[in-house]
Length: 349
Image 1 (cartoon, helix red, strand yellow):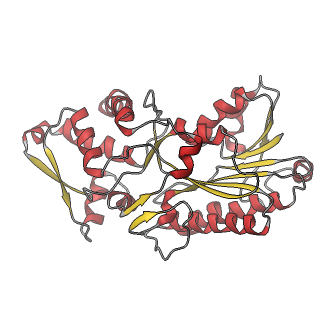
Image 2 (cartoon, one colour):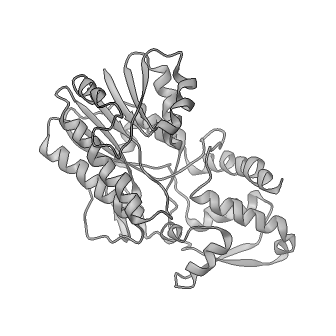
Image 3 (cartoon, rainbow, N blue to C red):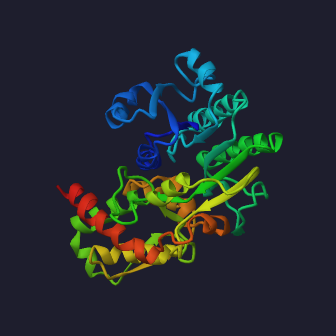
């Protein structure tokens, strides 16, 4: 089977590449930005079943060489669309161009493929927006609103994928809504620092710089103590992508999250314990002042929606694929050990 993959140079994509390298039963075409092509060649040059092609989601025909569009639309049977701009501080225009127009261009490619059978699309649990309560895998547009353009553009992009599925019921489409992706479940390793790692780095540095803070009985911080923190280790996400679809046609939506998700209070306290801080962390109710507090810790204001997330997520479908995926209580050791050993020591040096 010929498979087109976008976003292979991203955090999740790099982990998925490990599975691609081992899978010599299929042929993979990797769409790579010109600025990243040299990095990929070194990883795949010995693997004849993997081909890297220069292109961009912003290009209507995807490939820099238009002839490749005609070549691959004739033979591709599966598309895995991982590429997206995950930058909570990016402007709405830039996010729209990459996440919505980029997905539109990928779907245009799909429509030109007579042999296409499968489509995997990497969405996000952020499409739930500010929905309060349980968000089912079958839910989509149920009246939620969005506080940042990243979530809104991913919602708009998923809408395009769902429309394609509705108009092409013979296709096997998986919309995979990934949680906040963290490090490897066994080693805790992560190749980029964003999301909760802003918190790890900056709060950790604060206690390194001012150790007297450790003598406090409590410290206030903006979060909702009862909010569940929807995390998933990167290797779990890659394993799901590498697992074949179970439906014979139609759309399946999957919430890709770890088992036993912690509350924000549990997660933050576990981190503080990992850096030998035993003081209590007290939640601050959501208010307008928070937007002025977070930048002082170099934490994007857009992270507020995760700190106060009112949503919980059904995870029935992923249980069919990965029933034995990692539980938070098992994950937290490697996760925080890596942060302390690699990120905080690096910052300190």
